[in-house]
Amino acid sequence: MRNIDVAQVTSALKDMCIEANHFLTEDMKCALENAAKTEKAPLGKQIIGQLKENLKIAGEDMIPICQDTGMAVVFVEIGQDVHFEGGSLEDAINEGVRQGYVDGYLRKSVVKDPLIRENTKDNTPAVIHYSIVEGDKVKLTIAPKGFGSENMSKIYMLKPADGEEGVKNAILSAVKDAGPNACPPMVVGVGIGGTFEKCAFLAKKALTRAVDTHSDIEWVKDMEIEMLQKINKTGIGPGGLGGSTTALAVNIETYPTHIAGLPVAVNICCHVNRHAVRVI
Amino acid sequence: MEYRIEAPLKKEDTEKLKSGDYVYITGTIYVARDAAHKRMDDLLKEGKELPIELKDNIIYYMGPSPAREGRPIGSAGPTTASRMDKYAPKLLDLGLKGMIGKGKRTQEVKDAIVRNGCVYFAAVGGAGALLSKAITSSEVVAYEDLGAEAIRKLEVKDFPVIVVIDKDGNNLYETAIKEYCEE
Image: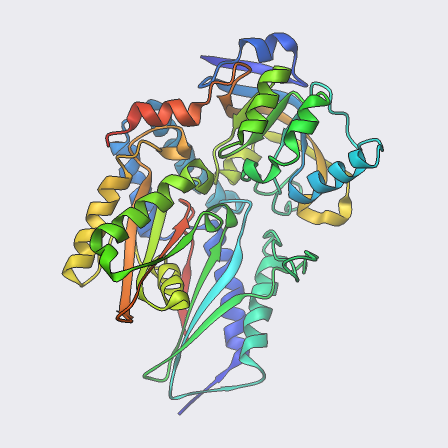
């Protein structure tokens, strides 16, 4: 058994909130670089150029990449041989988010009640997904999620008979409906299978996978490639103002499901597909 | 076409701007988003005066991140305009001349744009750090309690936007997509 002080979790998450909101991961930067070369529309090319410049300014001047610094989604993978000490893990996670958003000049975008809508003024609580894995380490992933694109995400409870075509149509129709609202070029996270909530979780998780990787499952990999091509033929383009770069990647995760169902969740992220990872 | 124009807007500017034009705005604009629009709408329903002058002005749909010391504002890119669609036609009828945001608008908003000779601009979504560089000053003028959603008055210099819906109702989101669609 390994003891971990929850203060380490707080400290890591504080830094991760600030890092994720000012710097994109290398795979995302490369994807934008490539898009700048392949984009066919002159205005689209100009917009991608602005996005690259925006990233540069964000890192150099420490101005968040986007003013919507998101709701903090935290994935916590806990080794089963870990014992936490020093207080509540959940409190420690929220304290890390609080410190990151307050000290890091990040926008506080969370309201305490979905209808009463009073701002909590420190961006807490986070949305936390725990999972227990083998080993004695803790892996933290933070994915601050902006709501321009979150609002355009969808869940479809398809029938088994809808099959592969049904899944592909669902993905394409979510992207088309999102259009300019989701700040394209987007990253499209897809969950297929499981239950209603499991496929939504998978779609969110898919967004944290590097955009230059593919699924290990052959048919899933083929669908990722095919759907990216199809999405980029819609003409939506950068900023929704026309062009050949509507998405930078389609990442799909799957899970076993019920004989009667085929759930599909499409979680859309804008080009500011942010995340930071630490292992304690 | 590319233009440099001043805000508040002049009739000759809104008349010449066409869907697809690239425009740099210099001057004074106002910032308001969801919660501020709701409050302004409530005031109008009660027959009370608004905290800002609408005539010939531009409202930028935006909620900035906090400014670091010595800077006028934090990250400051556009938010999704459709959430303001419920309120926009009334404001346009009362003299608002321009809106800056991102994303689609309803037919009702489009009709109000045409009816009043207005313009809907898009700024590049997710380019908040870059856009903040075109903002030279920011002052909260109403609803300070709303934090990031307060109404602000901004001074901007060469703030880059694209005309999406012009006074004739042409919509770049519809025309540009068709041009590059390969389906």
